[in-house]
Image (cartoon, rainbow, N blue to C red):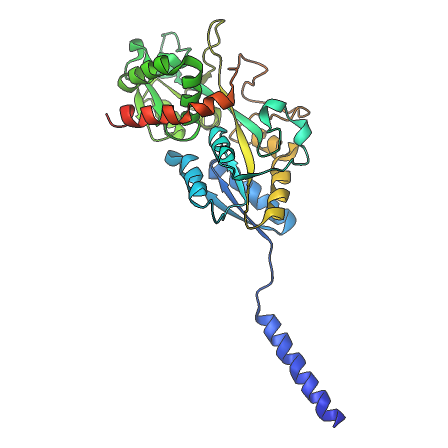
Length: 341
């Protein structure tokens, strides 16, 4: 009888081992939606996964539908969130999510090392790794002409059909449009964008603007420093102009990347850990030294930079809350006026 009991116990043990062995091993994961170009962001997800064993499941956006596509996806998923962390390549769409009550409060480990204007008071978002909105100029095509020096030169008849800009409904160009509506007032902003439409060429995204300048299709274009640096590093005949540096001018717009944790996301603890990793001197240094030449915002970080910063050129002073108020009016005007003609 004891032997029979022993056989039964052994059989049960074998069945349990086989059953457990057939189950997949439990693996921690974190889902991140990112509007920063895949070529610049993916390596950091891979590094984090290798260091921690946590599987990072990224969802990237397209260049021509940058930020807005992911933001609308997040709005659509509001009642059943699938995303844990939103890595936005700008700030206003992050503020739209905050306004809708969709962001979780969390102050990352290095929260206090960043300027107050680039972090939310309650920790619902944090800003880091900025880029400047600049004019990229083809020096060969420019010849002996004086280089354009203002964003508003895009609407100047002197440069008719020689300038270019990205579709102003997505990414940093949409942010820039809302900022100009706030800074200039709706009437002057509408006048500028109406002239822009007839005077300059529109491209799907900032990358395409930079490439058009690089190839000589246009003489200059409004784009971001990361896309401009790709062309410069490839040895193209281009240079960066930081616009609107005059005493009475607005200054150059600097736009931070932002990180936010989605409220009700499937992996809240993993989300906090990933934000701690990304919002760090280590990642900002890598982004600054990498091909995108992003601008660190950490107050204690000193790294060699290839681009100007808010400390070295005249930077536009922006009230992001006022710019957020102009998001819908700007988008409505641009959609109905520029993009339908």
